[in-house]
Amino acid sequence: MTYGQIAELLGEGYTPRTVGFVMHASPSGTPWHRVLNARGACSTGRVVLPQDKQQRLLEVEGVVFDKNGRCDLQTFLWIPRDRSIAPSDAESKTTLFKKKSAAKGGKR
Image (cartoon, helix red, strand yellow):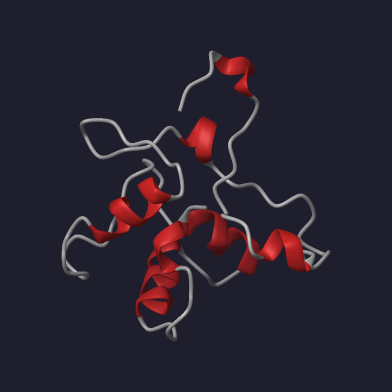
């Protein structure tokens, strides 16, 4: 999920930058590492130590990054089915980055 997606879901008055500030101040246990910038890259390099922590956490979940530190948002972007419906317990425990159909050449 991107900062912009979250801002859009929150509605008027929220920007991707605002979401970033809120994520930085979020309580322990918040899956902050699952939020990327619009280019599919991590934006925590100057905030989190070690600098590649976010990317490493996502790679453990199966997200693949290229040599420029970007993931293919067409493949890994999570899109909520219906924002008016709360996710089930099973869905809330899974990663926000879900592989889309493997019909796109099986990219990983």
